[in-house]
Image (tube, rainbow, N blue to C red; front, side, top):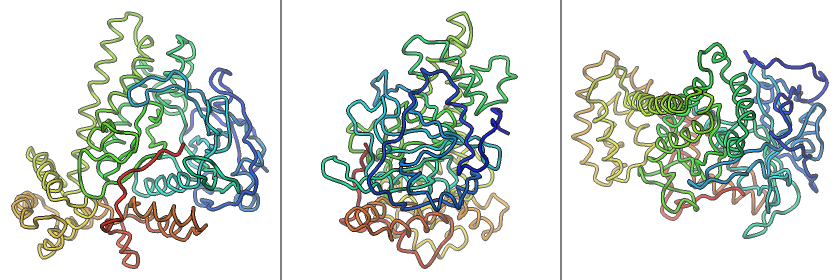
Length: 501
């Protein structure tokens, strides 16, 4: 249960707000109201999520356009922009903050978990710098699609509660329709939030933030002998598990700055993100990642780098003796690699249909990935079709078609089947287990771009709705939507994705 108890609130308000972050000192945030928009129109409302959050569905379906655009601030909300700093592509920026996002407040959901409700694209804040604080429709649709797909795939993630068009343009390289995205998160506390205070030498605020994070996300640590060291270890363990899950589904975050890494262990900030089609460990989609810092295979190491930055902010809390504190921090960070490797390899075993562990499993996985890379095989379809081969060797031909030289797969398949023979599961059981972890459907980049183009140019949201429907059941075959499982045709490939700012 949530360790920060809810406070009395209005039972008649659409949101049963209880805003614990707003009760932190004023230097943690800036109070700011959303800026009204011209003609809001509710594109999408996530009713199942709203029910989970114990919201007033009838009121939100009636007044949602006004509330989710920022035109109406609901009762009990305490709008604020959060302060944070961050390393962006390795360069420290001492003040970032919510430049186009406003936290309306928090609710405690039906499972007793505290959740943030935030508007993105709702106008300028004191942290906007030279930005307009607005969002274009395309990035809003992308975040809605990808965050909900990640949830359906079983990956810890922020969620999409609503998307609203504003009825007024935003000005980027071209004029685009404006929109507001309503995001739900376990919290919006980031590594960069700790960095904001540490950079100012404000260790009192670092400690207050750490205490708040422990209360909210890791209450079991309060009884720990060294709760602040425990916080670092707990965040590292969650990030190791999270990034392993990204790799299992071919996901590339695109901008793993420290201000985009949550303390809660949720995926956040779906800007220049993408799912791989053909497997390539060096794959980068982000238009701003010119040197591949955040490439697919670099994500685990960047996760550890970001955690080292978190450790730097907390280290004085670990022990009053500097050398002892640094050694404790280094030991904690050193555990990350083994935790990640265990999560990643266990997940890859499941993708291959292995229910036991043997010493040669890592080499078996690496051999397949090497063949996929050399043969240009689609990441998602390779593992999905492998499930059919686990049940029937006659399916090998369809699997091999994914490789530029189909015959190159035969020796690996023979090694894989020899490994399977040492397990007790029946083929039909193994295939079912593999289909439960190897999705048939991901939000393919070209499909997302098609949905965005139709919505932006023609106000046609049918592809957006179809993509949401298909990716809500990623592990089911869905024969009527088979085209959504296919990789892009020549000329459809998406080579770059862009940040939403």
